[in-house]
Image (cartoon, rainbow, N blue to C red; front, side, top):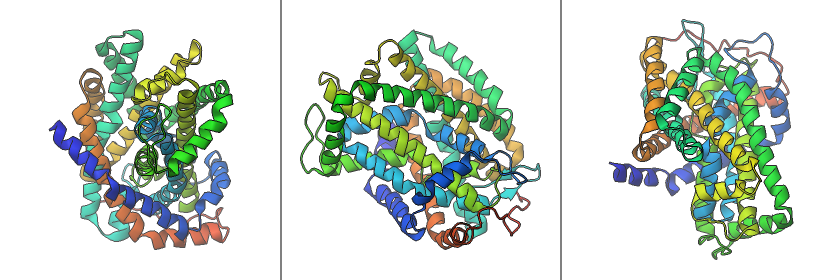
Length: 456
């Protein structure tokens, strides 16, 4: 089974999926007249309260929750794996993917708010499943999306992350896995029992802390490697377009290999096009769909354009500065880079991975919860939360190779309905953008009543 799902994952995340995702990024970038140019306005909106609006959490709370689910071990270990297998050029292609992915994340956020519904309990729900059902009339495709999301959530968003925390704490501090599993399960239970409001409150505090501490660690390493930064940047750009292997301690890295691993890591890291982030974007207190779309788009900027790029610069410069570093394995490369910061380096890495992974568990719990709610109604949520807590413990004490590959497959499968939704509703995205953004009506409330009673 492990071999089967490993092969299936490699196929699903191969060139066809990469072309589909990148193609959607490029298509929406041009059709929306480069929404990246509104980035500073979007960042400003993300930290401003939208008073007198409907929603469950603030715009920043929704953004923090999506970032919590997005920024995980993939930004640290995953980026190192891309550099190890794809060479320095992978950093450039990952960065480009992040810049283009801002457009797709914008489109997802817009559709999430436009087609969101208000359930009988007063909570908001939205995401690709509601856009597929109410925007395109494709209920069957919405059901498939939710099934894939619910399965993927228990893998990449839960057990795999819990396992990463356990392995790290066990190897670094020799803490028994069973104790780590018990503590994590209790902590997760104390947060998710309060629903999206509890999750967003914790994430709003945790995400800035973990991001700032990790970024500061990266800046310190870059300062230590300052004399090699020019060479680092030159090597990244030359390797990105070179038909020859990079050499210098790196594995073979032609333009094909570099772009393959760089683009794949960027896509997988920022989740633009995956359909996960718009689920929480729909819960935001916002005046109109475009305001939240702009806020959502900043998630890809912070995740890939900043954090993944910084990680890449740290890794490549560390290999150049210290040629004896083992750059054939992602985890070893990351550890070796942070070990160069005396005393606090390993602590920064340990805390970074632990908080990143834990916040991912919280963020993905909401994605899976809303998918289950769409499939069977609000009554199933209590059972889902119980299963989620148990899964955290199970993930802490068992091998995750098979689960990782299964969840990789589900991630790819949930992206397909979402991309279909984005492409078929692209004219709606443009129309809303033209009215609110291009014609300068961002402060105007949505004229159409965009919340309806759910029939589920």
